[in-house]
Amino acid sequence: MKLMNKLLTATAIVSASAASAVELEVTHWWTSGGEAAAVSKFAEAWNATGNTWLDGAIAGSGGTARPIIISRILGGDPMAATQLNHGRQAEELIEAGLLLDLTDVAEAGGWKDIVNPPALLDACTLDGKIFCVPVNIHSAQWLWLSHAAYETAGVDVPTNWGEFVASAPQLEEAGLVPLAMGQQGWQQNIAFGDITLAVAGVDAWRAVSVDRDIEVAAGPEYAKVFEEMVVARDMAKNSNVQDWNMATNMVITGQAGGQIMGDWAQGEFQVAEQVAGVDYTCLPGLGVNEILDTGGDAFYFPVIDDPEIEAAQKELAALLISPEVQVAFNLAKGSLPVRGDIDMSAANDCMQKGLNILANGGVLPSGDMSLTPDTQTQIEDLMAEFWSGDMSAEDGQARYVSIIEQAE
Ligand code: GAL
Image (cartoon, rainbow, N blue to C red; front, side, top):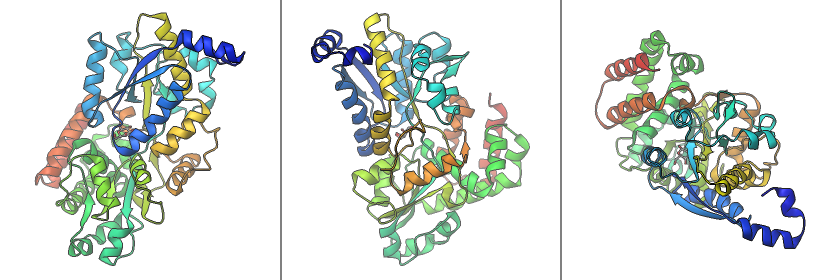
């Protein structure tokens, strides 16, 4: 149903939406406190149109949810809409013709003119057609620091990665965990990427992650990265949690000095009513580089042979990127909006830092954009092994080089 039709008369609104009310099942992996608060903004907006949001939350991380989502679509039991990370995760589903072409919705909404940075829409585009609606920009390059922990240890809150590492012994003496880390490969891989950017720099990171330069991956800059990873592993040795939000909780409750995590961590601080700059500090680029990657989430709509559902899927796609919904959702999620033409003055200190970096063009592609899901999984598996055992820096680097060598 078109917006204009809806506005015609009050009677028309009631009868038309009653007639066309459609229930759409929407899957996603947003189950932490902050994530649930954010996704409810989508659900409320959709329910307010007279349609129904059937929430298909899948507990666990994206690594657990994605295979379930993909196998349902492949197996002929599709949901009406689903979250995935924009990038290469849906490539095969699109090629198999299983995802709805949203090009007409995108053209009607002028997405090409409003989506910023344009790489987000490129990541939804295959052969000139648009198959997803990006809903946020999430960056992974953040260090979240607990003011309470540093107060307990009697140390100033660090301003960069080097100070953070240097503060570890005092935190340990105070009985605290310097670095909170969930024992899952994707979280450890985020730390690896962020430490690489901080230690080896943006050029070396780009050479390897985007251009697959083996010499750089095997060279001295990456040797330093793996040495620093041994240091970070030691800082996290008493962190026994699994889920990322449990690690964030260690920071919120002052049990840990810091956590390296994406900006979705902010949703947890918000739910705990903590204030950026007062209770916690966030350092983009680990306080070393003014850069962020432009990963995040997009919604995809599996092809369902029912014109009424298809029309509702397109209506939902348009709604998710509409100005009001973008503001409400992203403020709760801790992510940045995908459109630059909306008022984000209510954003907190951390989001303002992110918005400034975005405005200054300090953006990098996300791993989901530059590497296949297969390569990402191999790197995550290596990280899980590295962080949970005592693999040497040399062995870690050698294993990493061979994964990059084979990356497609
Ligand atoms: C990411 C996703 C984020 C966040 C995070 C942790 O893949 O892009 O929205 O929720 O997982 O669940």
